Image (cartoon, rainbow, N blue to C red; front, side, top):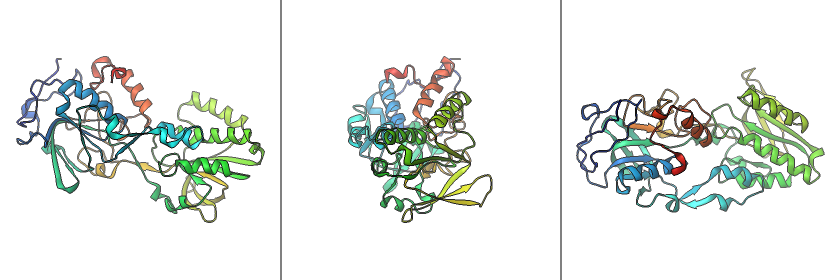
Length: 370
């Protein structure tokens, strides 16, 4: 099966583009809900929603394919953070500033950066709506909106972060508080949590625990620390081979694991963390803490919930072998906002792409060339 090009009546579109690969849905002029003619700044051949790792990588790839002037990225943030580094920031090995770059500096040269927030998607009309009722049309849409932190689903947060001895590596506003809490710890319970939702980088909640344990050994505080990993899951890790190895480390380092414990409230003024026992719904336990690292509940961005492009849970509904939307053939999704059957981490997405048959990869070619 050969690739299929698309013709559209949108005047900004460049003819003769071939974005489809074998294995993807065929598209034709009659198969698209074609947008009306529009001015160059109102319509793009490729519109990317989100300026994180996935969005920037795909805009760079699309720029080489269709030309910089035909690609735009919608991203409201002025600063782009390399978030994997925050584990080391929270662990005291790196400074927060080293994880930051201006969004302008990482945006591919010539690609238009639209400094706004997406408020609605209308794939039936090939358009999206931004703040201030601005409408943008597209020929192809790539959704890379990531995953949203939901601290507010834990009673007492985020206001609890105004108190000492509590931090979270998942937010730019709280990651430095983690290192401060680790340094100021003297003795007692050090609790690390894992929520009852999908999370990005599911290994990060454990990484900071091991870094903390190592620091307290180095500073002579380890014998006074009761380290606890309270996880909503029933296992330490989803892959048995790695779970077995981690359990050996946990045993060696004398760390306590409490399975099926989900953090539901933080009483920061009293240094109390309240956990629900998921095996006994409604039953809670209060744990006193002298250091608390919170991994927040997470979910799809609000704009995707009940959106035409999303499944019943709010994730972008894509084909796992092509990243192409199951209903709208000119819409693609990448990264944490999709319902791919992988962990929500960039590493998992890259591995997934390389495991696919060569003919079913979404426009990635060789990711090392991005």
